[in-house]
Length: 311
Image 1: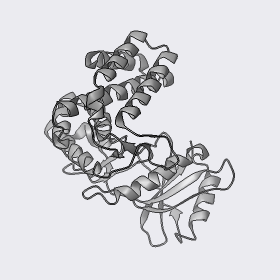
Image 2: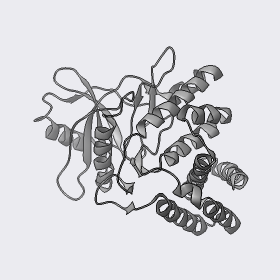
Image 3: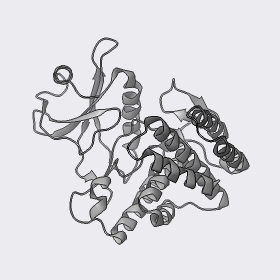
């Protein structure tokens, strides 16, 4: 989605009663997100903000992000944007929008190439500790953050439903049935471990380098967390598994630092973590098979090796 100049002007007009003098200031992120598009703005007093505009079909993503940011505000040691104003333009095709405070820093992904191994490992360990702090916010049921969304009563119910959906999608895309069978058996084999986890916790579901901020220069440290539009109530190790898969694809040796920083303990926790990473890897394979980005065949081959090796 590209932000139309007329749409942007209409959104700013809607915000001005709450945020007098708000105007575009020329700031932009290094990379735009897949759903919401971000524009830099300042209020009449010169304070920097981020305006995120979502297509009309993604209003629930906006609502989820607002709620997640409010929950995140109560977590010590993790800095996220503060919602300032939100709404939507009139009509069924009207976009949704969210105005947030702008955080200092750049994406970890933007500094990854310049960081030496020791600093990368230290930052990865810090990310694990931060994710553990996030997972102190407890929910009531597994599933959607919004009250009218899909919910599951137990961790196993959630995992079983996701496994079924991902395998069906995999087979529709022409994926090998033998891989689907391996994943299904692997998940079922660890049913007891999945069921042994805690209740649902606030999960970011994309706690990776593109959504984690570090200072633009100097010693890398986690200074901000953004993009919570996919947040949900889930097994916290599902969140960690998504991050571990991301770390594995960039610097495999640092998966140890991530898990140690988080504090995974005991055989059942490690088994749960493995189950969730397998499901995330299958979800990524499904996306690659459908979207076919550059190098998609090589990506599928690498994911097949990972999935086969872990199941």
